[in-house]
Length: 244
Image (cartoon, rainbow, N blue to C red; front, side, top):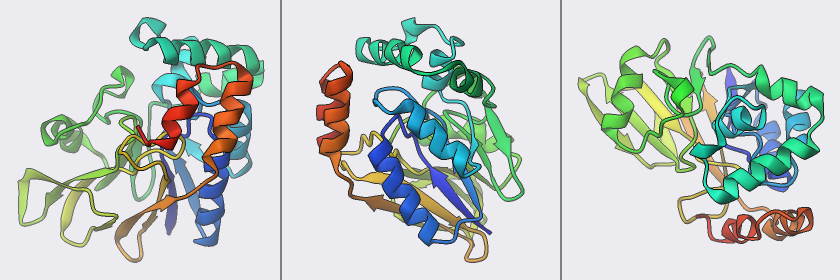
């Protein structure tokens, strides 16, 4: 089984299309999105439609929840608030309903997924350290769980020969043969924040027992121009060139 793992998309259609082209060439069986399909970017409806077209399984991100009116905007910075309010005006009711119905977590045959944390997904907390990861690692229902939210690729691991200590790696290839539990953030498709502007996605290959994270170039100017035309804060486009 091959899972195509889609990190935070944030309304970035050009980056999403490049990622989907890559994943389709890998003969993906199941597409799994970490949420935040919308927010920041200026093509939210198009990104939602892409995921619906491929039958992707999607968990609820904080920007998805806020756009659907389920999360107080006081928790967002000024630019994020402006983007959420704009997104609410351009999405139709069907898309808003779709966002409102996304689950906080999913448990599939080979893996689970959540946006921020697995153990308390409704809080949309960040996993930025091994101690942040421990509560989710303790309650995971599958050996592998994918998350998003930080926009930074990293894998938090508990190895079979030392199952009580949490290690981490930023490697692009995560081999799972000696791993008891893995909590993996594949980064962001639409707004990377690890100083690398390339879109990030991943393939979880159960036969090979590994996760491979792929960085992909895309035409950033297309999305920056789309953001400017929409009247969204210009910084939401300019930061794409820097990966911050």
